[in-house]
Image 1: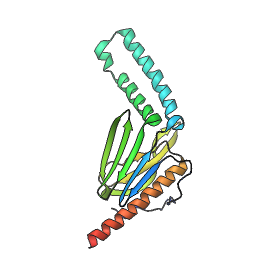
Image 2: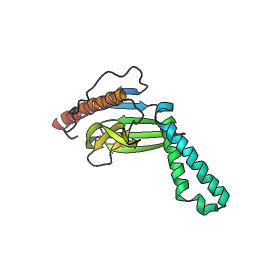
Image 3: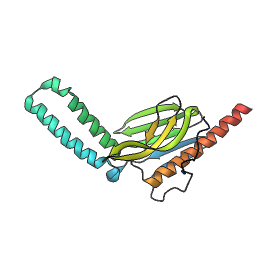
Image 4: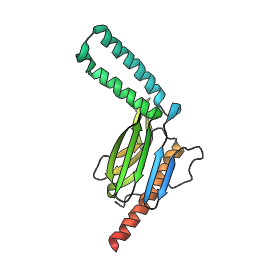
Length: 188
């Protein structure tokens, strides 16, 4: 792991916020962190309403024009489906991060389906609070794990500021333990 993993931005390990529903399980060098669904206050409600209106308009036009298969496979239909999936992920989807000395796996689950991103733990450069997307011209922040040889892993846009800082501190602490363990194994 790169030595750039630090607490330079003032984010340090702190006490878990008392209201947090995030579950963390430690088992030696392994860690599993489970983030619950965002719920009604996680930012997905507005997106769900937009998705509903968008899809109603697109599907109305589809039925009205009787465009058949060509219109069914159109870009507006795919955009509507993608927005609906994102809204449901924010509202009722879960995220689980599993870490061990070899791999870092992020898994998003929705409606019994899952999507995972696998990364090598040794490629972790840093853990930061990152801007995941913009809402109303303001960045919506989450947690970002930066990798040297792969796409970054970003999650947690529905977390509160205290939860984000706590998650970043916990992950940095665990990565430090993993790095020290790996360094001691390579030195012997």
